[in-house]
Length: 568
Image (cartoon, rainbow, N blue to C red; front, side, top):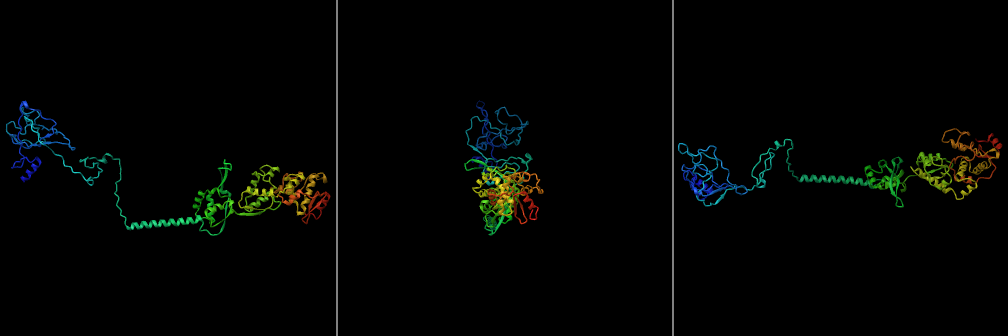
């Protein structure tokens, strides 16, 4: 046991250190010599040499010099100086006068009775050494530093919520800090550590199957959509599609004309929701949303127009949109034959019956549309506002119109045909009669309404001209007295026939020609009005055989009317 102590002290104090063999305690260092008064030096302040911890010494104060000094250093290795001395609160006796001013009290104080006492245990601080008469030789300084081994990265503990600082390599101390007490308003959820999931073979298979299923579903949907867009799933069957005008609205757009100038134009935009619904009901498309998407991309709302079209079930989206335009040639047409002598009201009703356009739309167009034709300007046609202003110009013929056609386009067809039927020599013949074109049409319309057979047209024309040109003969006074003009005046009013009817078309009250043509005459009646027969007839009446009888005098006319041959 003593051998281990000796080794311990030698290792700690050096190889020259000696240890008592009895108790193993180090021998007391020799008492330092008292310096002479003339060579005494003041004690060093701030010296780094601090004696080791004091031990119990014999009463005589003797001891041996350990042969080394202890120097205090900081953690960074710099000299730190002596620690402050701690003196006992109640020293046994004041220091002697012979001691140096800065010397610590004797290690073995005496009691007043002069007996020696065992010195009390002092704090871990030894009294400052007395200064020797001669400065001691410098002893080799031995520094003691705390052994610090670097901490591995995984050994550094994580910071706790209590606020303790994590110990690092440079910082080897802890700070107590209560985070919850300092910040009571902070509410945080506990952090849960995620569990490490391992994907195995089964997970990979499931993921692969999921991707395959999604791909198959998308491929099937894409194929179905493509079949509908391209029309591959349709049959070779024709269907009729009707786009009414009610689903179109007018819109103002700016566009460039042929001269490169920007002008404002009016276009009709279709309601593509209604168009898609119509196509879906007829079986032309299977996906309304897909067709509307295609229509938005292709700006189909301004390409389609109102009408009835014949489309095939195997048309693709592009062909369907192009087919709902009159220029495509797929628009349904209807053939309408206009009889000779039909009035405007009768023609409008016939157009509506054949789905060309409504009667109201046609009459509105006749009254309010200014059609730019030279013969209308030359003939002094009445101003806008009267739907009968173009009576006589809607030439009766057989026409082919589009279903749900534009009323203006329908009227243009009539006017263009009239201009073609009016032959080159007709204007000279009208001048020979002293009448304008519109007046010729007025005479021809009365012939059309009065003639029972074709052979009577020229003779009826001669009666009209005889009365117009010779009003004094047979007391006719220029009155034509034709019943057909009164029937025309009351046709839309529901009034009863009366020769006293107050109307500009009543030829019993107003001499000369009526206010305008009372019908739309055919080419035969126009020719008869331009080339009347040369007769002296001023009267005619319808017989029971369906033919007219003509008379030069009023007496002849009265006798026939009062006979059983008069057909009324």
